[in-house]
Amino acid sequence: MAAKELSPIDVYVLLPKTNCKLCGEENCMAFATKIVNRVVGLELCPPLLEKQHASSLVKLQEMLRPAVKEIALGTGEGTVTIGGKLVMYRHQFAYFNPTAIAMDISDEASDEEIKQRITAVQSLYYDYIGQRLKLDMIALRCTSNDAKKFEAAARRISETTKLPMMLCSVNPDTMEAGLVAVGKARPLIYAATLGNWKEMAELALMYNCPLAVSAPGDLDMLASLSATLLEYGVEDLVLDPGTFPGKGVGQTLDNFTMLRRAACEEGNKTLAFPLIGTPISVWSQTGRSAEEARWEESCLMSMLITRYADLLVVHSADGWLVLPNLVLRQNLYTDPRKPVSVDPALKAFGTTDQNSPLLCTTNFALTYYTVASDIEAAGVSCYMLVIDTEGISVESAVAGRKLTADKVAESIKTFKASEKVNHKTLVIPGRAARLSGEIEEATGWTVLVGPMDSSGIPKFLQEKWKR
Image 1: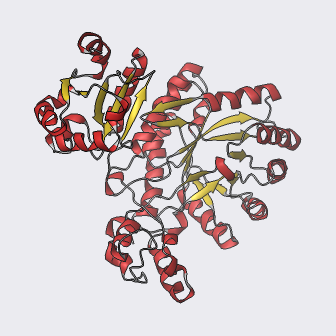
Image 2 (image 1 turned 90 degrees about the vertical axis):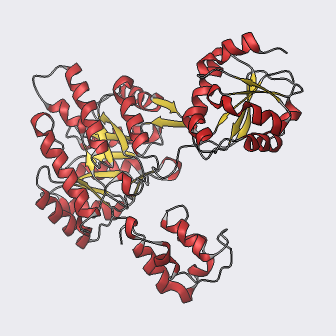
Image 3 (image 1 turned 45 degrees about the vertical axis):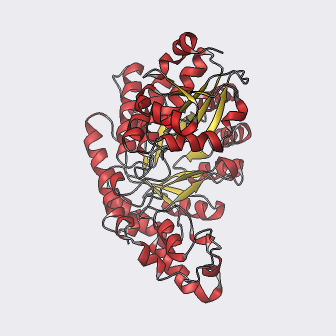
């Protein structure tokens, strides 16, 4: 049953209905609602895990199974999970497990070049509204056609980084050499084709690794290979329909769309697996400069992120090309049902004392981190009261009564602001100016109306704040 069609009642009728509160909810209906919204898992209901409810558990697991299978790549803390999509379109529900991005390394690279490449991958990150955006994996490509070189490179990478790996070779002997080198790291095997599927399937089963299936431009062949591998016993598959740059971009996007529609809207279990895109393919074109290839690769990344790719393999490590796609990915994979927020708190910036200014803002993540960034950049020492407005910006929170005088008073009390400062003066955002009188009445504090934009805070405090 599709996530958008599933209701709490559908789940509730299969729960033990004991209202035992062991799950942390007041009753089973409340728990069912959170289950439907994918906030909690079935394992939080102890009675459901008992033997007498085994059939109900199986039914619930099948009912809640995502349209696209969720697959883990790697092991331990570095594990990257791909797939797990419930719906085709983001507005229908929410997307889970952001598109993983793997940077390539050739097995012909020297030890020093491998180290430099890994360092480039690990150092490419961006802190964005409280989250660290970064690359996820390493894709080792066999360009040498030499199993020993491939094995040595795989071992070197596994010894240097904990990032999950993708081993790329269509030669089963070469692939096995790489698998032996990385031990139990659970890399993604790339790839099974019409000519080698049986040998690759054996390796996937032997080493307990997920297996990519490749049939560039031939969706019927891709479906046939997937069905054959499932019948053979390989359960964790990743589908590669081919990525065609240049004039083939239209076909590429059509193929990705048709595969995702088959899984999410047609219930085709043969194609219900994560999709892999290879923007790196732009580098195989002739007659293009490196600069043109970089731009095209970045554009292709953005298109595939929005067109259902769960894993991408890229070559360019230039931050100015990769970072915009990391931000795009993050924005696409936020939950449209709830604003991005931070925890309410009393934050301290710089070196504070009892004479330090006390400012306030909302807990909308973009608002908070913008204000925090402006304060830190100017070297201002102050306290910041972050008020719970359910993740809504200042102006909207004031208009929607999510930011009120009573909430400000409650936050001052909850976070014991009066114990941190001795002046009882609060600076509120300029966009909340109309609340100033109400806040003074509710708190007994003096209110200063700050600037409309947080970039003006340093100048405002310099001119208006008196210790």
